[in-house]
Length: 88
Image (cartoon, rainbow, N blue to C red; front, side, top):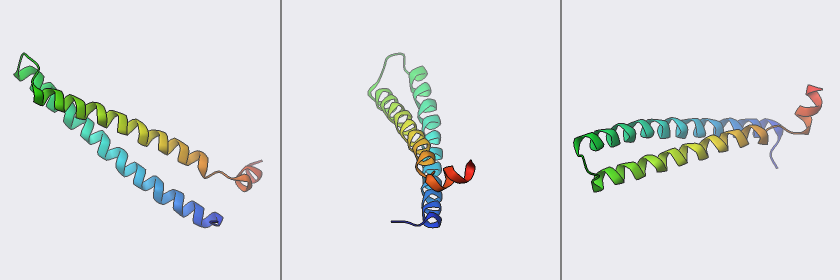
């Protein structure tokens, strides 16, 4: 069982890791969106590379949503009974 100080440090480290992952996924979304746009306008018909890029784009959007959901859950996880009592 972690003490309160250790729990804060653990939560902080997890929050830093999730923020880093969020930035990476956001950058990948921009990268794949530009690549999909370029492939779509270069070829009038849908090619295999366009479909691969579109699939990667949708996967990155899904991953970003998961990271955001994990960040929201992390905020709720760090509040304990002691913090609720001191706020009142």
